[in-house]
Image (cartoon, rainbow over all chains, first blue to last red; front, side, top):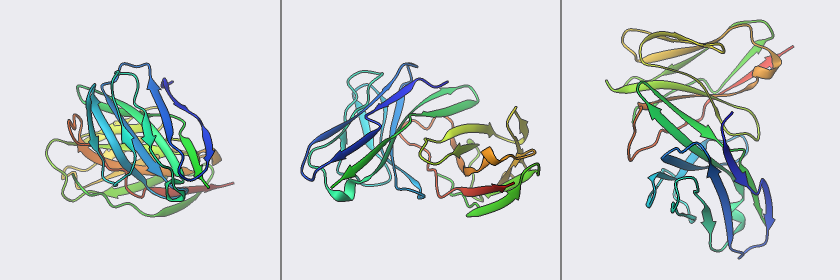
Length: 114
Length: 112
């Protein structure tokens, strides 16, 4: 069972509010990821980190920002939420060993911006 | 990163074997092939990974021909609970500053 947690699971918030989506993993993985997915649609990578103090933007442009101050923690922040940010946000971490790589996903945060 | 092509959807019945094929014509020498499963409102879950020939685990088998330009995920005797989206990913294991792309996936519907 993967030990990766996301809070909150559901969030309904008004336009203009600042929000932070939390993601934590207890597996000691160096690499962590944020994906955005609308219902029934593709997963889009929006941010990833390959270690403490390193972050990169993903394939899909996002107005969100991330930080990686501790190995286990990879929060995502939206400074001013808008209805276009309504989506599901999935956090993942990965381990790479010889001939093997697997991403572990959290349960997701479903964000609704009114 | 190698581009992958999968069928958009497939239908099957309980107890049947399901084979989902993924095309990756420009796969590179160092690329591995990985399959994930995703249920509605959940994150994807790792199923199987391979480099060449055949890989089998308790859940599925992965067949990779010698030219590695395609791969087939085989699910033996599917049940209703196998209804999900299945993603084929191709890329190096240690992607360093890059990350794998999930694509659209194949939506498998298992009927009773």
